[in-house]
Length: 292
Image (cartoon, rainbow, N blue to C red; front, top):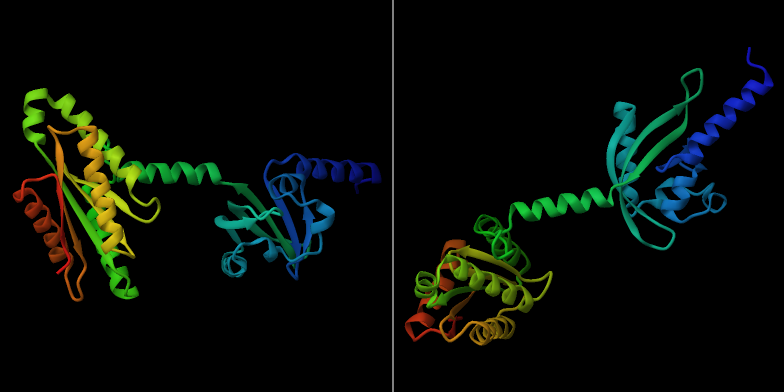
């Protein structure tokens, strides 16, 4: 049998493991109340151990139902490995975390609680987000690419139909680009496309509108929620900025269409395309709205 000194040494060793782990280690009793909260958890979540002990573990979750789903996994598999959750810190900040959680059992195999070891995955989530964005981004203009537009346009149209909110599509072609590209060379042409990409990104409503390089010197912008005033203003501002920055050798012909009731994605894109060509046929360097 272990003597008292050996037991104390073992207890100190286990406490040192808890205290020096950079991960958050939280244990709970059978009722889901916190009974252990290590220093890693204190640093990450901002709570002092003594103010959190006895509180429900689920109170830390942004969505308490995530805890219920986690417990269902435990009941089914006995453990949950790398389960992603969102935890709210004492200051109110939301942190994405990956937790590995298992049952705590006594020597007879009776469940006496749970232990969870959670890692901060903010950096990983940011890297994942950047990789996803890179995979759907046009390398030259930094706008989304044509493939991503083909996916997003379907979702945008379905969202508009479901919500009843309007949706507009801006389609733009650069006047004089082919001649400029042929005379100045592809490197200069690429610089023009990059400049146009920056103008578009600067002009659109951030986190509301989305912009894409449609192909060659054609660009499209999805304008959700509003179409008349907002779409016209955005299109005109882009046209003017291009004329001032790159003109008169290169300008922009821009068409705008609104999604009509019962209109297909194909016809929606076609309406914007037709408006763009009307702007070009009228002399270019103008905006043509197909709202009829």
